[in-house]
Length: 85
Ligand SMILES: Cc1cc2nc3c(=O)[nH]c(=O)nc-3n(C[C@H](O)[C@H](O)[C@H](O)COP(=O)(O)OP(=O)(O)OC[C@H]3O[C@@H](n4cnc5c(N)ncnc54)[C@H](O)[C@@H]3O)c2cc1C
Image (cartoon, rainbow, N blue to C red; front, side, top):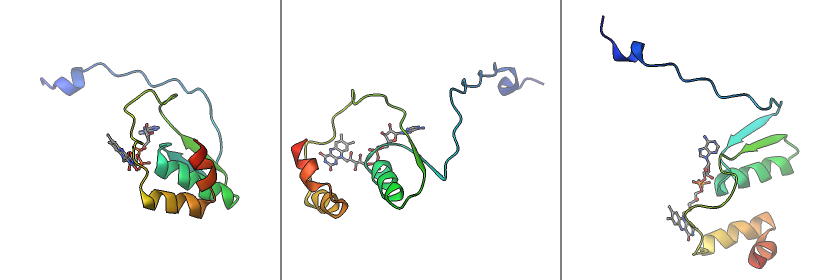
């Protein structure tokens, strides 16, 4: 049999650096993941938020703050702090 997938080398499993228990694991620390993590944590739910990037050194996406974004920030009680950034 000549099956290239069988002949391909098996990738090494990534090294496990840490193991933690949580009630909720959110993958992605963008606006959606960060706000969800905040809302769950405020409800006393143990959350782990995983973000693959260690810094913000990538295409900047925040040159426009929409009205609806400010409404959400206000609902979260973060509008004043948001405007100081
Ligand atoms: C070029 C551009 C410009 C924009 N400009 C504006 C703007 O000026 N104003 C505005 O309001 N909106 C802007 N947007 C839209 C805004 O960026 C999105 O609406 C918003 O980022 C969506 O948030 P999100 O959390 O759903 O996804 P994302 O912001 O994409 O967040 C997802 C996160 O998950 C992480 N991730 C992905 N896979 C994994 C993984 N396997 N493990 C761990 N982490 C992972 C990513 O690194 C990322 O941080 C722009 C978008 C683009 C593309």
